[in-house]
Length: 231
Image 1 (spheres, helix red, strand yellow):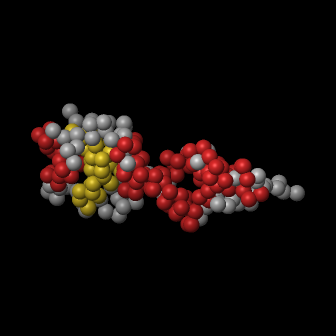
Image 2 (cartoon, rainbow, N blue to C red):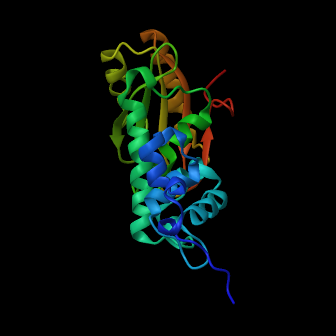
Image 3 (cartoon, rainbow, N blue to C red):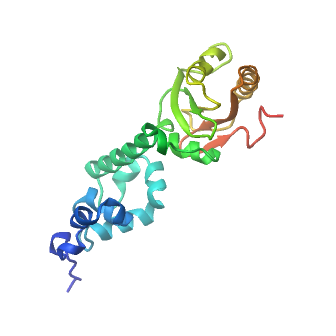
């Protein structure tokens, strides 16, 4: 006889995630309980909380769910397009809240922070996008600005455009990010030339260029970590 698993509705009210959220607030819930609220139902042999625990473990927690593509989520056991969309929407809401609340702005402490912020979206773009992550003196994200769309080369990029929004916002620094639709994250000679030009311009404008990241499909590279463009 197969194991019998209680559904969430069959659990005592005090153990149901939605009831616990109502009584105690969302901060009291474990990660699996929060995800279970989005999933609503489980699968054969697992209720929604157990399924949520399995999904979080499979993807490496919330960061892994953020990095996973929509298609990868759809293929996961117990998900599908509707639940994958709910998870992606919830994670994006959280990301936008971080950017929208000045007192709780995301602080950039490493290239990985930038990659986690942008990789999910930019790794699937069909054209090259150049973006700037605009920071204050404490490396809090003020804004993410799309500067250009299309193939990047020194002729097509106007240095002034890269810094325009940072100047307007009286920013302390920027991090430049662009994607390679091919998925190959190897910096090109042109990428290195552009990086050097941006660093020099930033020194004149008193706006530090902290890094230049290239994002591919599920991978990224920091030019500063590789000392490409930085002497």
